[in-house]
Image (tube, rainbow, N blue to C red; front, side, top):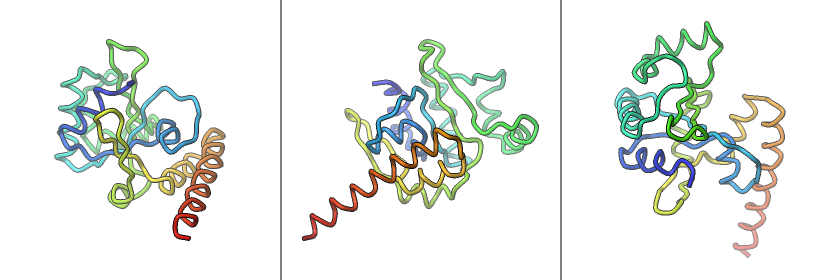
Length: 171
């Protein structure tokens, strides 16, 4: 499984994060091509320390010529956003060029609420915290790209299907 080592390490260390983006769209049942892993991360100091430790443990490095520790500095993240328009911090696995992850540089929605609303999915033996459909659609609306608009249509269909299924179960 692509990204298995990442998911294992994040779970092992109890890191608070949510899978978002294209992989989340797929895990919610809307098939669409994607390659990168997108995550929303709790910016609590201890969580960031564990995240940096996890990435170092598995050998992932920033795509930019900066250190992982730079990402944990809120002033640097803010400067990157202002000066470079940076919305994601990209990490990659130098041993496997296809593996890369985009970590949001800010949480455009309330992370704690989204984390409470998460759905846990299991891939092999790993528990993966998946953003809820509702919160994913909110992020997609904020991003506003054409791809996001298409994803929202698919996610609405899944949500409607799940609602219908629930209604039939109650009857």
